[in-house]
Amino acid sequence: MREIKQLTRSEFQVMSILWNLPEQSAFTGEILEKYENPKPAYTTLATFLKILTNKGFVRCRKKQSKLHFKAAISEMEYAKIYFAPAKDVFFKGSFIEMMRFILQNEQPAQKEIDELRTLLDEIQKK
Image 1 (cartoon, one colour):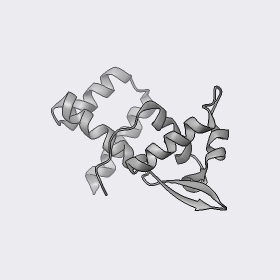
Image 2 (cartoon, one colour):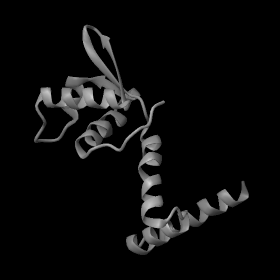
Image 3 (cartoon, one colour):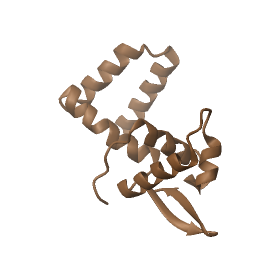
Image 4 (cartoon, one colour):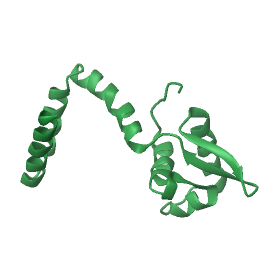
């Protein structure tokens, strides 16, 4: 797979819709229906889908004489691509420093802290 770049805000919005659809695929009109108002013009959405196809985020094929789009990358795969540079740029590649920053600035609820401890225990046991 070629290098995947980060998404623009508008591209991310399209991908978010695709990721939340059954089978992460749909026709342009079906994607447009999922937008909240104000919806983009059909042609604007078609342009975004063409860009996403060219960037490798979406696969396109003709189906029922219309273009059908499917996410080529999962939301979690994209999350890895998105967060890796942030860790490197802002935290000198340190996972601990990134987590420290998040925990100090987000002020998680006790339930979330407990879930995090459980997750860390599970990881440690592996």
